[in-house]
Length: 92
Ligand SMILES: [Zn+2]
Ligand SMILES: [Zn+2]
Image 1 (cartoon, rainbow, N blue to C red):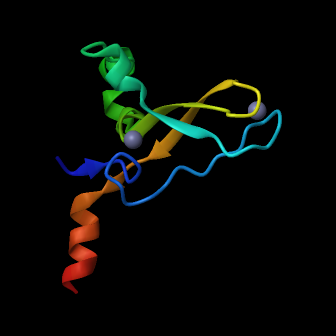
Image 2: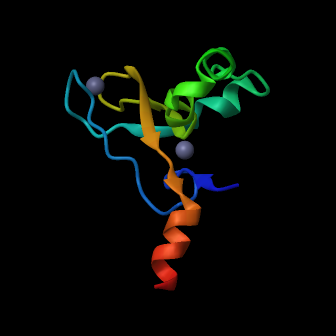
C-alpha cells in the first residue's frame, strides 16, 4: 500500500470546524468502514482511469465527522500521503 491516510494512521489529527457553529468536529472514522465492501469510487475509477483524475480521487480518505455543538454530520476529505514519496524524502 503506497498511500495512507495520516489521520487513520495517527500521524495527524483532523482539524475541521463545523460550518454552522465553528466547533471543532469530532472524527467518527472512515466512511469506508461503515459501508464495508461498497466502494463509492468504483464508478469513477472505471470511467476516468485514463485522465489521472480517478487516481487523485482515490487517494483521499473520507471521514464521517460530527459536531459536538449542533450534532451536524459532516464529511471531511483527508488527502492521503504517498508513503513511497515520504520514504524517499527520508532517505535523502
Ligand atoms: Zn482516514
Ligand atoms: Zn455545529
